[in-house]
Length: 545
Image 1 (cartoon, one colour):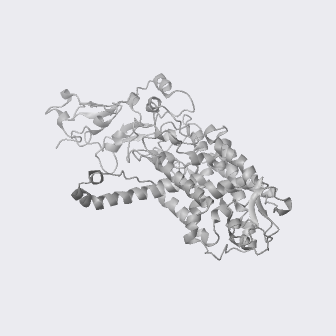
Image 2 (tube, helix red, strand yellow):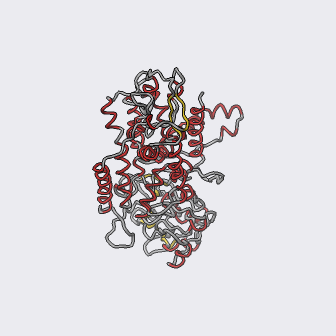
Image 3 (cartoon, helix red, strand yellow):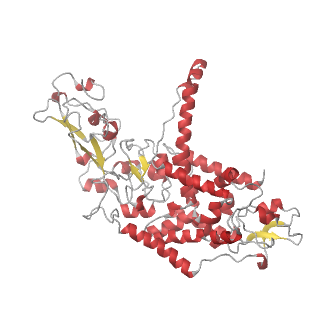
């Protein structure tokens, strides 16, 4: 096994390990978003769209600077997307004897597409819309592993535990008998899966099709690796057999095998290994005559791609779903679009969110879900809280801790509890107490903020719940536990949510009259004087017969 192969599988293994560790409670010994921070496109696109230097993403800038010296080493050794494609190319690829099924003319045209994709993305970023999530390899591959493969593995693990439980019980292996895996379910996973299936299938036409022709991060690094200090060198021992040219996974070697397209070369050293004359190596000091001039988009292409991106962003900004400020009348905020605690104001949030799915992966209650068109085209794949799936745990602040771009603020637990995400309200005609006149205490009992109270009303033999708005954080515990089927009788909407770019949520909340002191261990018992019969606290959670 070659040194490169070892490095690549270590890199992929570390990426998967960090993604696996993106779970609650977080271990703080290493940033689990490490790989996302390395993507140069995430750095550049997010800085432009947010108009701020985000220090957590500076490693992406360092990768660009290292590319000046080492060429596109990131693509060849570190990128989990590239390594994943190398693995799947073994299944879908054209085989050992076919480097590509595209003609030389088509290849020359196709490999320029990635530059146009890059310019389109930067064009959207210029108008404050971050579209790096469309094609950033680290954002894509994190979403794929975290929202598609991980839930699948958990599901299979759960099935395995069920299958072996009789045997483990008979053998007395208690840790296996009582082991449980929390099932995770996500929206939009079919789209993510189909997208990657298409990317994998493109290997039929060419190995590493994505890296060669489409990857905008690769295009960005190609612009910095036109004349790297360390590059491919060919000695006079070369016999022009062209084996290296045929085996190069990036088609970075000219028909004259002594000449190299360094902007396409990922320093994989395949040419070194296959050369029968051992005439190829990587080092310093290659002659300029051995370099192939790299492609640069023509001025018209640059302007057209930037204009297409900026125009798309303009359409999104002027669309009916665009939100400039939540407090200006006329905005249409979908009632189901509840952003996670600590989310920046909507416009800034969409400018920073790279839709990697880390916040959704780490959420212990699975309440964070990717949205499709709930927030318009500009909000695709961004996270929202889905209370019916799970409540936002008052003792968890993990989503902000793993967000690499700061779209979700990293808040101390005390501050997070005051980061109000919405307000619940009761639908009387569905409520068991209001409509069906049956004792039901569920929302009252489960609310960790004590934001519900019971009252007597004329004509109703049982007490009915009311929401105390200034105590409600919008956590959704009431909606999640509500026993009414086909939609809860108490629901959360993003009304009165606190979304701040800076400052203290506690100070702001107290200033506007909120009282969000949470006590998740609260053992609440309803006032006995509201009930005619037995102490209702003896009832199981739910309602009377």
